[in-house]
Length: 101
Image (cartoon, rainbow, N blue to C red; front, side, top):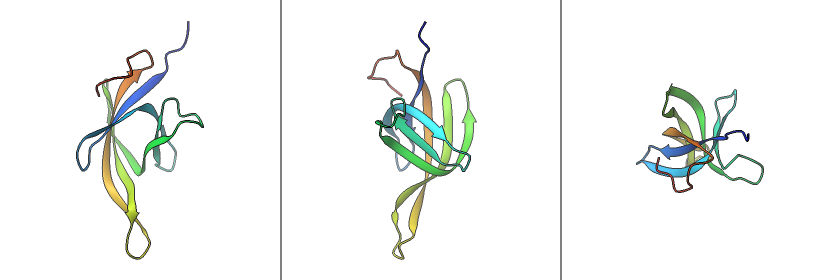
């Protein structure tokens, strides 16, 4: 029996709702989240990243996160951060590639 790999369908919320794809979530102990396409192996690209992440809620349908993503640089060269929210809906490996989040 092969194990079932759990994936998420990521939808970012700001400035307007946008589906980014199917992948894997990683959050480290420093509050940085990265969303990788597919399994998150070294060949897979990062679809989105966020800092100062907080888990707003986790339920039967998915996980809702909030935090800040990099949005370029300010005039003085410092990084500019923009507020962002993610909704990650649970998906499994055996579901079709053309999923609806």
